[in-house]
Image 1 (spheres, rainbow, N blue to C red):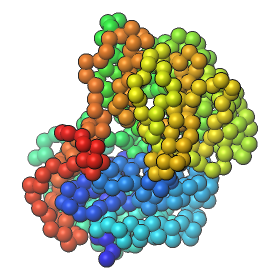
Image 2 (image 1 turned 90 degrees about the vertical axis):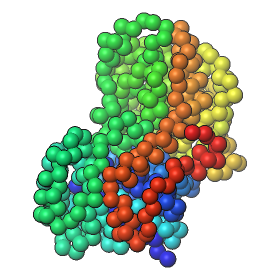
Image 3 (image 1 turned 90 degrees about the horizontal axis):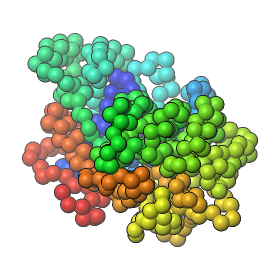
Image 4 (image 1 turned 180 degrees about the vertical axis):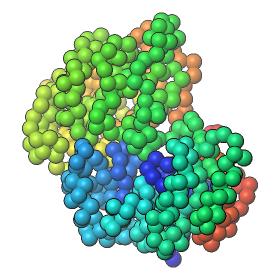
Length: 536
């Protein structure tokens, strides 16, 4: 039997479709249904590795986590990773399909990619009872609609009942709801069973007259008003959400505090092609950390730890640092400070980056020279979930005790080590224990290290030892409070689901797909945390 389908559409980008999709996944899972997320086409520099060792958008991995299932490549068969203003890398079924311009992709996507989308959706629909689909941008982009495979064409293919979401926090929510519906064809409007207003803060009574008027105007019911939910420990889908979390200058309070119990100042270089900025959510959430996304050399002077993050265009971002003088500032900082590099950031810390095939930028460029490694860009991407053990017993001059590491790799570079170089960790694939490899590198003085592992800071033991070691190095006291990150994420997913379930007419939503809705169910705990024995 083909799965029942609900599709979350938006009046535009960043209206909250991804988190509402995650909430619905958690709600249906809590009611005992086998549920999975699906987004046919996603544009994001935040990605994740699947159980098959393939690449999908980070938002769909979060939604799978909310549903309590392993992330699969079929949940996001097409991922577009912008390489600049005019071209993008297109990942199809988890592997690089090519680099194309927007116009070229627009012309080819229905003819070449719609069958792939259909195959992935049908695969999911045969395994699950309910599919929660997420649209992309707006379904009413009339200049793109003819070739759109992410919104109404997908809703028709899945025979989905659609929920249209507007963001009141951005203003103009009633106009955006009305305008979206007016630009749809009559049969498309028929698929939309109701609308919801998202990110509301204030007095709900002041909103009621507008809700009644728009219901009468569009002849669709408002199924609820979802409140603005601050402090959720859940990642933003892409860079549209980055400005809201980006602090770019240290405050006087941060720089003037000289006490030993002050916060550790961690600065991440905000590269132009910054990818997987979700790597640092767990660090930002730690009470003992002052966190900064920085783009100036001046900001480094106050940092206790500097991190070079992942990049979609590693060489271009390295050249940007050289033009801005950040390369000199980082080398100067390295003489006395602590530095970490993640994926592309690690490659930049090495001696050279060579790209003979032009996967990102053809040619060879000198790195920062802080790690004794050389990177060769290759045509095949490494994508896998991995875990292992630290090979370097000492980081930042401190011993790490029985420290495992875990995360996921998504990179096209191969690392060669100079003689005598120390690697950071020994890894094996979570899905294939025989797949063992060396990862990363540590400088001779142990104050600089790099790793290919995205998500490494999400592991509580490693993150806490990392912070402890940095604090000891800077003669700071141990933190009084540390976060259990995985439990915080689980609590955030449950909070999101509770708030959405309270705000929406869930009986109506369940009725759309012919399923009974039950009140007063016990709190949901993910299978992953149940297996791990994590207590509430």
